Image (cartoon, rainbow, N blue to C red):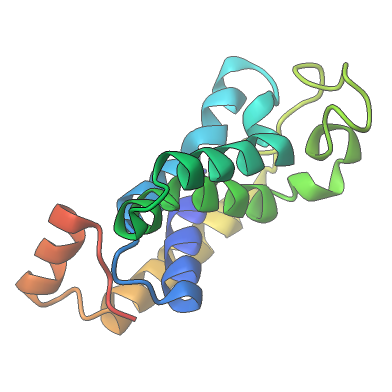
Length: 157
């Protein structure tokens, strides 16, 4: 399930934040980072709120005094946090609130990224449909708009 996470995260972040300096490529990376854990066998730190908050804090501290750097790199934690929303991880108290709801929840449970069956397929189809809409909405048929997205990670809301 890559299309669902990437497209919905990028479109939502673009429309909500309307930040010309945020790199949407990094939002996409953050949105699929937790999928790596699904491939490796179970939810880990990337499926926790704590990880997203620590990444966000790290970006803000490392980029302190450089707003453009902060806005660009904020895409990774924002993408990761959007994954938690889109995946429904927030309904799994032990994983989402780890370690506050119990320290032994990681790695044991199944990750819903790939275990949804036809619902997962429907989510991917919705992601593709939203991608088609976004292509038109963000005028990606124009070469300069595509170049801006590929080179700089920018979409114009």
